[in-house]
Length: 620
Image 1 (cartoon, one colour):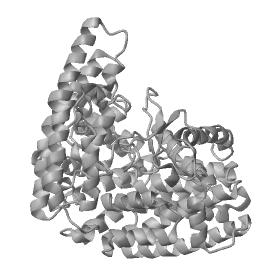
Image 2 (tube, helix red, strand yellow):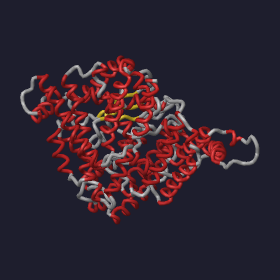
Image 3 (tube, helix red, strand yellow):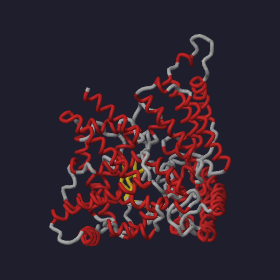
């Protein structure tokens, strides 16, 4: 997930921006507003005034606190996922012109405030926070030039799938009290009215030539149709009623049941029907046959911006394309070593076919697949302390991806736990089409998504106490996904990959990330077609057709995100090699991992500077 890695995607969040009101939030805003006024006020003649006594770091902290409070009000879904339930009755703005203007003004306001801080007076965590906060606001302002709001939906990030996950009671939206149930009714009212905004923005895109590829949008139609039920009780949105707490009064049970039935009949089904019909009858005929961003107005510049934001580097699409080609060749060489070890006689392509199709590499049942991950959990929990000083307190569950989205979902993903411990993290495993999920993918996928990958990194970050909230719950994609892929490389150090086929699975996963560098830049910077991408994947990997198709369409849907994995991994590995070389016998892998993780998901350029300073301090 990825990615992001809490599972409310950046695209979905962009659709759901607004400014909201709330009595409790307003009380807190008064407090934080005072702090910001102190933090940014010009010095006054009065001696010993409070603002004169504040350090630059304290002033900056007050700005971060005020920013975070205002940000949560503008993004109530973010608050829900972070365990702040004050805004659980709101969804937010769906991309109105007013909402977009307010979001841009918000970014400009806080950039102006932070620029009043004297950076030369900051050090340590305070300096890191300043650099990240300033960079993030500048990126938001620069990104406003590009009309993402005209393309708010595709098969991979579909806000209507997201609503269904929330409304089912199996995600971050709580359904424990009567007020919780009422909150969701209010949120659904906003969703129902917000459909018109989404359609309006998509029509604007149709007029401007900013539309999604047709190949993606045909996959959205069945996703929506799945919720156009005839029987209310078959709706996912009825699940909270099926699971209504026993301690609710009979009066509340009846009232809420009636209201949820009405909600599904008058809002849910009409909402999904309206979106379904618009996409099927109007949007798909206007969608484009091309696959990459290069075909969009200003698409080349738009993609270059996304690349810079995703990787937090100055690498160009052409440079990344070449890195990908070089890495594919290197990993193919590593795979030849596995072929020699298992005594396989034939070409690499023949080995790909063998590992894809031999029955011994295919799970018999979905339950067998899930159990394989559960078995791995116990083993890696034992060996993780050998490489890590700090083990996160948060727990996680292993779940199959829900049926309504499994055909378009990736092989696995991770959803962060609630910071207060009320909800564990979730490691989602895609059990659709077992023939496309070979047994040799288990160890590398688990390392990436769970331990020591996303679960370790994200949970450790949330549990940090000495950084502002925008860092506890934010982060750079290249760091997050780079850490996940780097974690896959730790398998032998953690006692797995003893089976050469599982190690081949790790190489295959790494190869896939290298291929992503080639095909993502190929699609969006070089004009490759969907078919050219699929052909390159088939020739260079063992991925089954179902996976090749879903992944190719993922790259089409979320340009540049796929670059994060390999670019981030290469940087973390480069820094580890540097530390091992410079420190020699004094190198401690547990301390290195602690240094990488202890400040959260930093931009790669900032991470590099930080680790190099740590190395110099260790040598001194």
